[in-house]
Length: 203
Image (cartoon, rainbow, N blue to C red; front, side):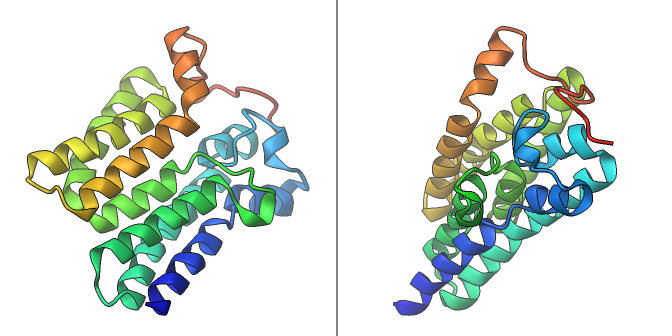
């Protein structure tokens, strides 16, 4: 029983490593949460620091989610709920990081890593539609919301109503809560589009 608990704690601490904050401090000596949209994530890293750092942040945040699920599998003896809770813990850590006064990102990149590792094909199908929506609308936030909305739907269609389905619903709630201001902006046509600076760019 103690190993699954340790696994969840470790995954929260892993998720709390905010790579966008660390990279912005290392490269420019700034707190990225005070620039651009103020979000500690890959999209704001793109706005503030450019493509290279943004791609690195995206990859590292996705890897956090992948690593968390595997930690849960290894220490949880293959129990689905342990792997799922470890994934959720990593997302919580990203959103509310212990090391950075609980001011983190919105967790979508880490969510991609978690969902793709737990249930690859439902996440893949949802991801394809989400990417198409971003290409068409250039709203990253809308694509993110579509991704977390469709994944549990595809799980349900495939007949999955166990731990992974409930995990996807929990992640869905987290994502919509973190994107609540983006939803209002989308409705009013004020959301920043992909490629827009959305604030100051540090060069």
